[in-house]
Length: 503
Image 1 (cartoon, rainbow, N blue to C red):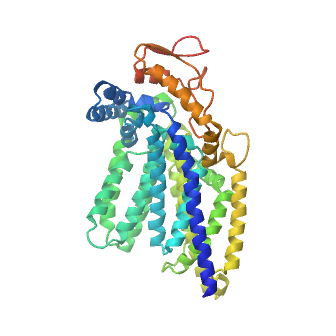
Image 2 (tube, rainbow, N blue to C red; image 1 turned 60 degrees about the horizontal axis):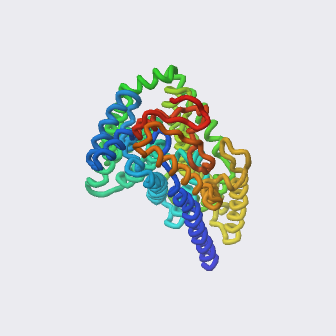
Image 3 (spheres, rainbow, N blue to C red; image 1 turned 135 degrees about the horizontal axis):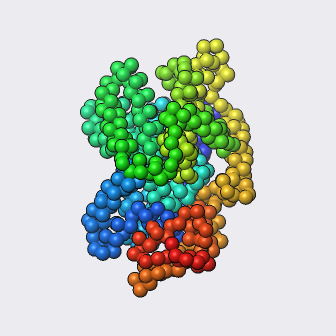
């Protein structure tokens, strides 16, 4: 009994350390968001809504303009109506000083939805409260700190709202579906909430929509075979998601956009490529920090799986199916643009991989428990002693340190802890880089908001925090954002200092 108490104390200590890691890692991201400003497509998508606010000061007028703009975008560029509509009401349309709300929405949604997802799903799988909250906090910390492109995930509203935010809603929907499957009574509230989420996800990212549809289809097949009492309700939710997704895919603007991109391929080729690139992408995520967290939570996962009534008799089928589902996300971008997508889309691959990984580990733990029991070797899998648990956590901590030291996002010259999202933001705050960025962007916006200047000359920024988006007001930029800026602020032309001519 005394040994069990020591183990439980270690588990509770690990839980509080996990909570501290999540909170302390996220705080610098919230803090630096106060220095952030609208960026790139934020201007292009929300120009009409901004004009409505500037002319009328009416929220109703803004919403009508956002709706009209979303309809135009559906005809001229893309059909993802959820992201398009929300992009029109980015916080900066009311005041650039309010743009920090973007990060508060995107980051808070990811934290809240995925913590809820892990709590509900792992609770349903038999994990106790300490174990599931420890795993949830550590998994979400991995998502945030090792995000491939934190700028596009949390500091660019237009990019994050159609990708990171959509995947947060997917996690929320998955958790609510688990609750619905096990609910007693009519569960009308859960069903209504899921109907709303299906409508939103159907108009979200194409990769996320296909991923959601495929996962729901697999669940529905299992429910039909098991004659689950909620199977017809899940069939209705699947049909609703499919209808909304088809509506999004059928937008005339998708054809227009495909013509601009000028790329065509077959669906079969896109599917095969997604399997190849998906496997490669999963390989890049199997890094020391993920293994470290897996080791730390493995005893809790094993204990829950060992007590589960499931047989865990098809590990290769389940793992293969999970891998194939993961790869489905890449089919739409590979089909449309011959690429797995920009940073904001790659972020969603990482998010989904982390979530699927721990579910896969749970299944493998159950398979191992059943095999040991069948072989009469259950004593080999007896609960860890306090000393054994401490040794496991020591190995985990060493691997975590290796992962942090080996962190180097694309484009960075050096490896190190400074590349993690939280430490990177903290260094920008402490060095004054964030404040300098804010001051220079404020000067830009003062000139752009001045009606007495129909033609504005802007200077390139001298400081941009690594977690923010790169400055595009520079000579020879790959993307010319000046037309969007001119439309947003009602300017005749915008020049770049050091570059001759007008856009």
